[in-house]
Length: 86
Image (cartoon, rainbow, N blue to C red; front, side):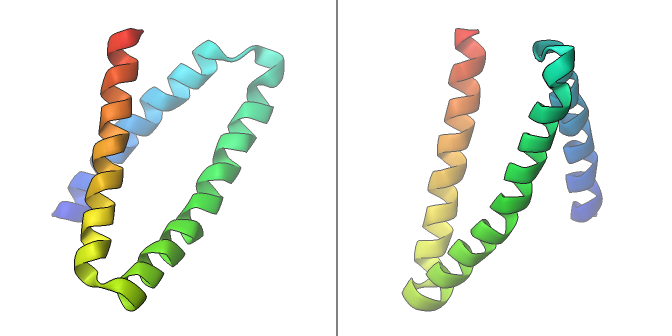
């Protein structure tokens, strides 16, 4: 059930992000911007997996959990503050 809900919300967010990118990008730069964002996302997945794996195995599961929560709070704060400033 959680996998379904996660996929549902990701698909909703992905459509809005793509619409925003298309709206804000010049037509001749759209492929470059889209390719760059896709490449960054593909690099972030193994980098995040390595970071979490090293923290979990070398430091402790509690530190890994706290690290994830801090990153999540920072990301949500950036999203909220950038939305309120726009």
